[in-house]
Image 1 (cartoon, rainbow, N blue to C red):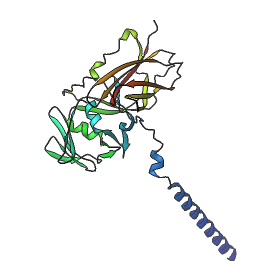
Image 2: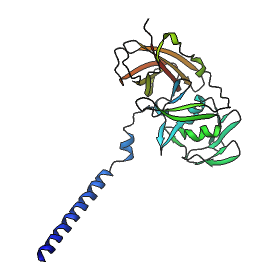
Image 3: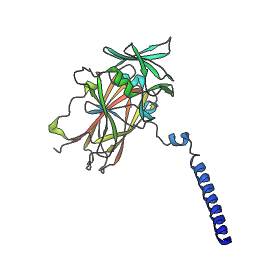
Image 4: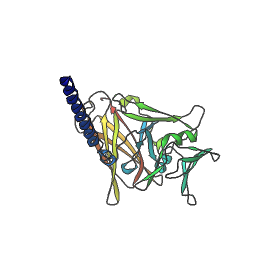
Length: 284
């Protein structure tokens, strides 16, 4: 009996030791702060580029969207401009209204969960808008839903990269911004593969009186891209609606499958959003 009692006592001590060790390990693991996690995200990372009309819509640097509680947060002014909507600021209520044709989402305010839809009913945005670096970010989906003109879906490419595909709802009209219409469809006779490059990052820095955009992309075409065989088109749009069109050739060397590339351009004014598309060229 004494032998059994001593064995049970030893088991009890071992159990207590294991539990104590687990508590210490848990406490150490929980010491990871939100700051240390978010610091790993590079400025200008395009977590889910917008896609419509055969091209990407990107927001550079501190305007880059991010996820919060599973929702895509977008910079409201640049986002409104990119989808062709109007944005009105109300100084009395310190709120903004997004409108497109006969629909609107109003009384959007930082820290306020409720918004006014079509000037009539109030409803939740799901996540309260917030200000980051002086920029108001809002959840994208309730804005698109409230304007009643769009259909959208999360899309994955062949390497599981995310894109938010946007289009007009059936029976609805949607006039894209003038900058978007500057890009004509790719000519079939000179295009080998459309859209081989996926945008990963877009940073923006001031250089004298001009600005420098640096675009990081990944080859998601599933094949090698020969030197100089890709063509990139960028249309940068500033806060006044002015657009600047540029074409780039690349890459400088053979690019492997899933290979990463970087391109830089100089623009005359700070961009609010950038339209981007790419293709590989047919051999002559």
